[in-house]
Image (tube, rainbow, N blue to C red; front, top):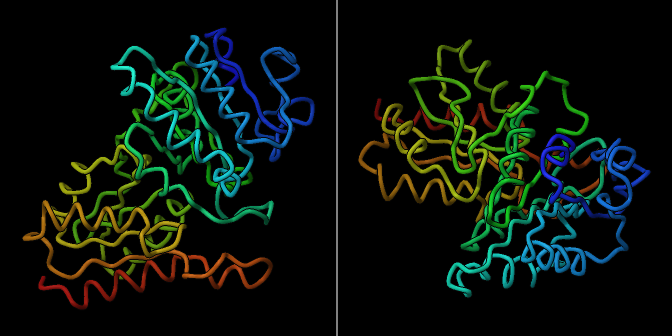
Length: 313
């Protein structure tokens, strides 16, 4: 964000505790000191007002970033997110654009609170882009791409990235195209489609499967909307098997949409029924019980073994 704010004076940042405190998970640390209170705007607890004001600013040529600290608070700005920001470009016949980024955090992480992931709700809305990085490099590249996009973008940050392993990120002008999936691991025996916090979990599972002689191909979606259907279908046509993995609940999750795409475009290539892995159908609990609700590498390995056991290969 700092890099883009230096490049483009139209970019400003608004949210709760984003000033001297440095953000709820220190995600905006140093911005207030560099850019000051005029471009780093502290806001009261009013997600609806923040997003609404940002839409107005975007209509007048600014490029705001709004921080809704945690994804569980997005419903407080639902009218702005689903009825206003995505529709204005179409309702004005292209005369108006809404280049606003809504940054939020979801899932399990070091903070321990607000773990529930509603990101797929917003992927359903035409006109709203939804991205979710799974690596530090993609966190930078997708943020720059989101700020430069002329459409409203929901930037959903897995909570686990905040205190995850540190990695070098590309310096300078590094962007990741929105709607383009990443081939995280090549394989031949089945395809695992995943996103966000589950990327490292799936990579661990794929490494364990390789020791059993199973080569899993891993696709990191990076974007829920638009969805890179071409990458998904090409991989499944190559491997003949599909397992979907995400941190949100299994039913109605992005994995269901991925499975539907494959059913429509590559049904004849499937050698076994699709497997889906996600969070158990309960409100994500607190404390030591939480691990029993969330998907693990062992869950992914089991799903892959079951798929291969039923495969016609």
